[in-house]
Length: 309
Image 1: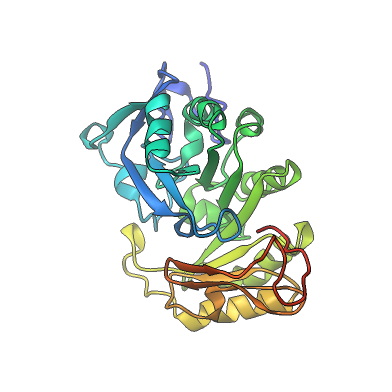
Image 2: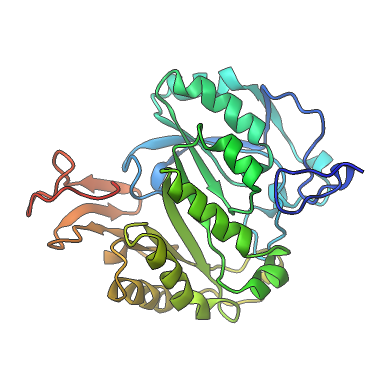
């Protein structure tokens, strides 16, 4: 029997984990959500900061995370009961154009289970200099990554843990394909940021290994540590104390990473971007209010060229 090659699950086509439909129309995108968001919400802090992006959600996911915050569309009990709206790729780009948006973000669920929709929309978007963004779990096959590489400008990849046992228990997946995806995006010069959600009792001990992994690739990759709040099948787990997040940020900064951020916490110094040469405040963030002090891609104080912003 034929197997799907879109992701590492390699499911039988008629029994996919993600619910991917067969014989889809590549130019008609079945959406569960279309919204305009600050790009920082993805989170992307070093790609078109302060801009807004057209966010598109579809249906399904190839992981089954116990803490999924969007489980109603990523893991619906009955997909037939989920309200969807169909747009052509042209219509999605038109929405972006009509709202003066310079990027389209595929987000909310796992976008790469339908690479055809991403590619066909991106082809049209490129004609208007509109960038394509993926907010992804990174659980993607090499074949799909190769199909996407010419059409994706920026990604934020969830690195949920550096423990394969965590991926098996909490996500019904594996770690290695995620690490392979991160390296693929980096090696193909796609703007890359990484997010790790720290869940008490589950993966707060992964901080050192996450930091080492990013350090071994590039110390200029922005890394986001986000606080967990009770969700879905982990609703009995307490929220992450913000001090755990701040300690993780400090550890990463002390061990050589240049750009580290706190997520799902109150506004703090860990929301801002600082010059890694002189520590001048470059981008100040208060929620989604952004003040950008960069001048001609240089630090206003030491005049050094800023990396990855």
